[in-house]
Image (tube, rainbow, N blue to C red):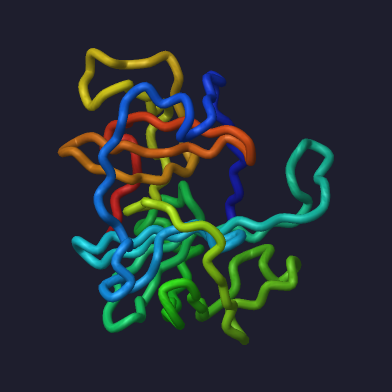
Length: 222
């Protein structure tokens, strides 16, 4: 697996939800327990986003341990996933962000995500991604169960494919900022307006940034 450890190039981070000058009206995602297939949110090392408009589920899993001497983990289990929910189950495709998917699909592993309840899911893959066995995480021979820890209003999880993806204060060119993300960074989308995405970038456990980016700067969900 090709692992990329990337950081925001210009650090202009603010605490999400506290310093936003622009009020964002979120779609009413997963707030009705009777209609929700699965809640978007943090499931420990797994982050999931469900879009009820098209039943597409996207996710990002990252777990690491040890120290490689360069500020990163010595061993890592990382993959991006996408699929479509049908009757509380999705056939998912998982792969490393930045692979030229689907052309470069050596790392493509299929599997299933099943919803136990709207706060619990299980994942089983046809094979394990590199590093997962080292981490003691066996997605192939057993099902891995994940429980919701914090609900979010995400509708999609995407990753940056552009060399530089600039932030914008509003969904227009005139509001361009100096801050940008780089290829491979993960973003959590809560609103889509045409060619613009309002999203959150999680810089670390304490800080994040919320703003608009261009849809052309992120991966396409296949």
